[in-house]
Length: 144
Image 1: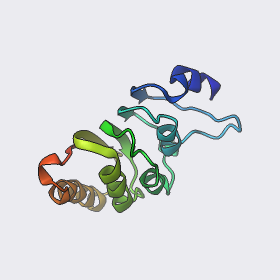
Image 2: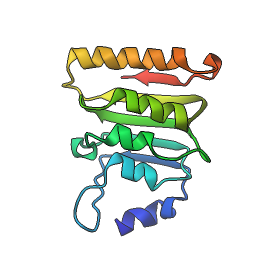
Image 3: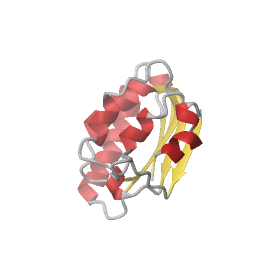
Image 4: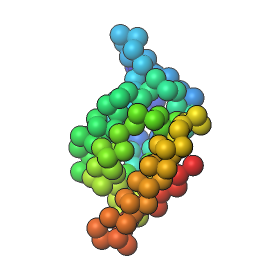
């Protein structure tokens, strides 16, 4: 954990891309996505590429939604390996509260995800853009 804090300059980085990384806290539990985002208050471009399933909890979307990023919003945000138990509606609240106008969002679902959830997630992405106010500031969402 201390090494990670040193690498991210105690949260002062603006761009962070994590790939195939597991970060362990002092109690040997893994640092989950929402905890990492919380440690990056100045980051405007964050990408979680090839994350491990244990980096998601059933509360990940809800915890992201309750983060206060009102001072520095995301220009770009990427999440990979999104699990089927991911709370879409809470994630929508996170996006609306924490993205700049016309932000770039890339979302990758787990490969073995069910077709029903995949369709729901695709509908969610389309709805987020249509419901954005004003609509011309809607984020650009790339669902892979």
